[in-house]
Length: 399
Image (tube, rainbow, N blue to C red; front, top):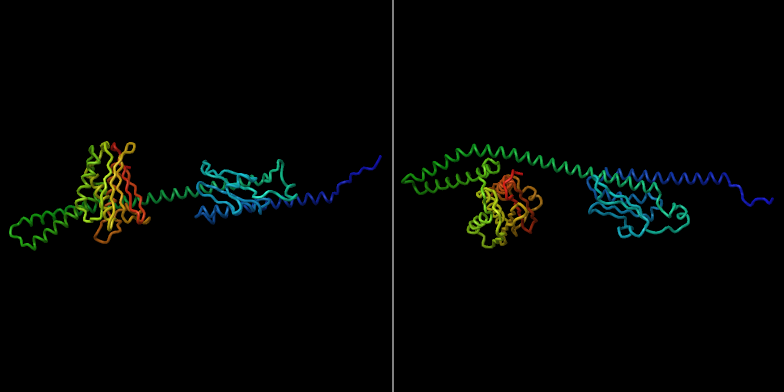
C-alpha cells in the first residue's frame, strides 16, 4: 500500500487561524459598538441641529464597515439629504449597497444607504465575501437597521418637542390675549362714562350764545379729542368682544366698494393707485356690514401707511368653496419677520408715539374670528404685504 500523499493538518496552524478569525470578529464588533456609541453621542450633542446630527452620522457610518476606505454613506430624510464625499444618490444604484428605511412615527420618510464606491481588488477581500458575492456581513445589515431605527426615534422626539413648544407658545399667547381683553374691557367701561360727560358738556357749552371765539375753538378741540377717545374705546370693546355683532345677509363687494370710495377720496398721497378686482356674483355672507367695513378700512389704511412715495393697493374678492376671500395687497415697505410675528398683537405698533394705538390689526383679527373666519398675512421687506381674509358664507361659531 503506497503511503498517502496527504499530510496531517498542523494543529498549531489551525489554532492560529481560529485565533485570527476570532480577533477579526472582535474588531468588527468593536467597530459596530463604537458606531452606535457615536450615533448616540451625535443625538445628544447636536439635538438643536438636525442637519449637523445627520452629517456626523453619515461621516461615522463607513468606519463600522470592513472596508471603510471605500465605503460611502447616504442619508435622506424628507428634503434633507447628506452623502459622503465619495458617494451620492446616483452611485447608489450602481454599486453593492445595503439600505434601510427611515421610519418616523410609522411613516417612511427616507432611508440610510451604505455602498462600496469601488469594487474589491485583492484576494483577501475576495475571500471574505459571503455566499452570493455579498460584500456585507449580516452584522452590518443589522447595524444599519439599528441606526435607522434610532434616527427615526430621534427625529420623532425632536418633532414632538417642537410641537409641544409651539402649543405652549400658543397657550401663552392665548392667555395673554385673554388677560389683555379683560383689562381692555374693564378700562373701556370705566372710561366710557366720564368721557361721555366731557363730550356732552363740551357740546352743550358750544351752544351757549356769546362764547368767545378762542373758547369756542378750545371747546371744539375738546369735542374732537373726546370723539377720538370714544373711537379708541370702541376699538377696545371690539377687541375684547364686548361689542356684539349684528349679522345679516351682506354683499361683500358692495361693502368693500363703499369703503374704498371713502378711502380713495381721503387719501392724501397722490402717488398711491387703487385697483379693484371684484369677482362678480359672489354669494352674500352672514356678517355685520359695519364691522366688515371696518376690516376693509383698517387693512387699506394699513396699506396706505406702508407706501411712503408711490405704490399700488389692490383689493380683490373671490369665492373659494364655502368661503369668500378678501385680499388686500400693497407694494409698500413690507415687514420684517420680527414684526410679522407680532403684527396682530394688541398695542404693538411700529409707528411713532402718538401716531398709532396698535389696535387696528388686532381689531381686524377680532372681527374676523368673531365671524368664524381667519386672516393670514405674507410680507417681506421691500416687497409689500398681502392680507387674506376668509369669511364663511354661512355664519359659524368663532374659531
